[in-house]
Image: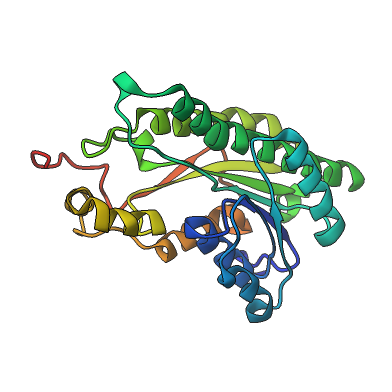
Length: 274
């Protein structure tokens, strides 16, 4: 058995219409998984191209992940269209650079609603789908075969490991720390159903947002580059291997952990900033 194969599995991803989420959808499709995306923006054309390129099924559901009703409706439709859910990757997120002393209620509420509540609601709905499969299969997680009944991955951030001197993002950081706080208790609670729960913390990545910052705040991007050991910002494809590991049977003995992929930015004392 190819421990990295996801053939015939169904993966539900949030925030995968573009950016890191799209890169995650691409690697899961390449491994054979059918893809269901929950997002509020129109997806990049590259998402639908995954169907023909990798001979998998791809579905997009415009969904506000902060709404329990919309999430439950989307998951029900996905189960009808693609069958049982095996993988859930929570990549939807927002960030606003705003000083702590003047952080607005709007920023606080929106950031926690999307980053934390959205991740919680979608993971909860997907986990319930996985539990229903476990019950249909006679309450077996097939431990003798080294297989799991499902996996949940939360996308967190390097910001939860080391404070940024170049940005004022306390609200975002706190929301991502709250997401990381779900990993260990959920891994414990869901283990009896054969479900693994982990998080992936990316470092500074060359997303569409980062490209915008190159034009708007070039000194900020230059600071990020100085902080990595390789003197550059990471590319989305450099996270794909880590995500595939977490979602495949290659990590069948790995749960309740945070995987930090940051080009070494968090492991050394940087020179005087800026």
